Length: 157
Image 1 (cartoon, rainbow, N blue to C red):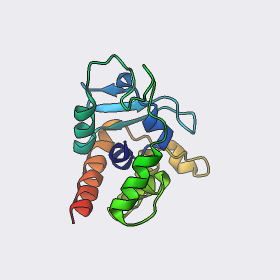
Image 2: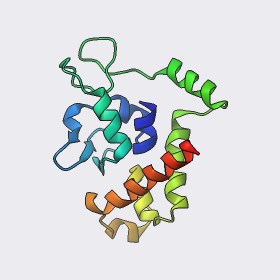
Image 3: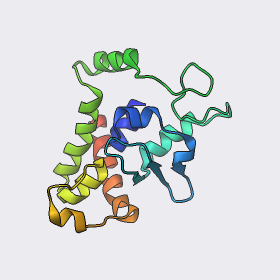
Image 4: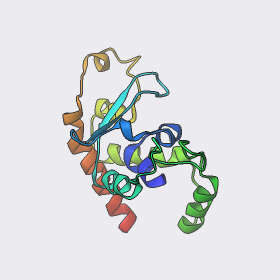
């Protein structure tokens, strides 16, 4: 869950409620319909997201990628796992800090503000120009790949 969160920049509840039906294996992408800003959000998968999905595959019939304890239920905020990750890292961080790490990495790679906003599903409400810029999923493949490679490089130091 935490790895998927970091390498996708999705909000915590978006990851927790992800279903297998949200994944388009043919197009190597995913779409979240129920987002904070009420707009569907599609992104390409990257190598780390692929790894997580491969590990999560099972035939239980549960529609959620991150399954909870109840049949056909999703994982609830994993507080113990987050606390364990904090211990291993030697510092305090939140789920939103994980999301910020993705965006900070994207910024360091000098992507445009429009690409950054699209990647993290922020609206361009105050920016008239931003409302005219359309970035499709193909244009986000290379940024997603580069961000994942940079995050992985930083993790492996």
